Image: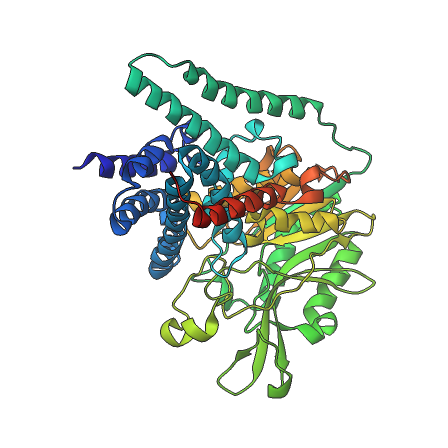
Amino acid sequence: MPKKIILSLLFGVLLGLSWPTAGFTPLIFVALVPFLWVIESTKSDGFWIFSARIFLGFFVWNAITTWWLWNATIFGMFFAMFVNCSMMTLVLLLWRRVDIKLGRKAGLIFLPITWICFEKLNLNWGFSWPWLNLGNGFASNVDWVQWYEYTGIFGGTLWIWVVNISFYNAMKDYLYSKKISKRLIRPFVLIVIPISLSFFIKNQFEQETEETLIVTVVQPNIDPYKEKYGQTNQNQYDILLEQIGSELSKKPSIIITPETYFTEGAGTNLSLIEDSKLYKDLLNYANSNNTQLLNGIQLYKTYAKNERTKTANRLNNGIWVDFYNSAFLTDSTGVQLYHKSKLVAGVETLPFRNVIEPILGNIMLDFGGTVLTRATQDEREAFPLYNNVSISPVICYESVYGEFVTGYVRNGAQVLAIMTNDAWWGDTAGHKQHMAYASLRAIETRRPVVRSANTGISGFITPLGEVTEKLNYNKKGILTSTVYPQSAVTLYVRYGDYIFRLGGFLAGLMLLFSFSHRKD
């Protein structure tokens, strides 16, 4: 097998073996070295040969880390991998132009900042799939990246690239001179300094303890393929009361159920929810027990043809309907609602619908657990509780988006409540990675995270990203714990993905210059 093919396979395998939650994280600091070797030695090859070798390595990485998508949809798994690998390969095609036109040093500057631009795009375009953004690779080692409160995950992405490039340069020196290069010291320094800084930040962090919030999270463990969507709201209500009854003696201020806990039929009419029997029963129960209930629910709203929204679905009977994957809080002053707004490409939203729907219909991705195209809202919500603490519902896939989650905090959230299903992938790495990524959101925002997952993993995460209690996968149960609401605003919450904005500006200048510059 040609050496370049072996190196392509090797970098994909190393990245896969470094990934949370079963991987060995330190490998991520050298995983890109064979990749850098491949692109440098292949850049003068033809377009298709260069692209194929790069695509191969990326596909291996994607397959090792996200193969579990197979359990939700086979087509969806291959589609997600193909699109993601194609986007990654496009980054390298841009790099090749800059490297050839502006030289190797410029190329090694351009590569990491353009990769960050790709990751940002992957957070915001229609087929968004940021699961493998490099900064997520430290989700199992949160003590190394406490400085994410300043940088977000793009700080981690940049760190990985800088260390790998440093190792690559040291290795090249050794291979050409056959002597141990002084450059070999540099990558180790680049590893040690950020980790040391992280431990310093952790030791300096002072948690606000003036206020407390007793939270109960529910893990009903209902199979979404066989049981969940055949239940009536009354059945779910009865199951909920039976499950939480034993916890009421702990006097929780709020009880949280997972995403789409109530899913009877097509859902509950949005316009009538406050007058529905379900809401009145929940409100009466909560008030009689001096608590509040934050629930996942499926909602809908109908329209006449001339009143329909852009997101409305046309049903067979000619009615136009918006469907919502929502959270609602019982409140004596009126129901508080939030609609999930980061949707999973596929059946929650169909990007480029006019082009794709006639070809593929609904044969797309099913990662999140609901059906038909969803409507969203523009702003993040922070629900004030009776004790004046504000809590925000973060629904499923939304918790993978760092800057998006900061919107809840800017709007007043002191506690983040992740409500998810996570049953679609089975007992694989998928739900474990999703849980681990929640720790990164805790660090970025310095907010406690409480997590209610249908089949697991439910639990509690401190502002330092440490999991204090959890219910494992495929186990019915309930947890109650005290969390400390936080009010301080981190630099990342305040400024968001500024690393991308700075890097994107520089990458744009370099790319433009590459089109106007003739290398001597």
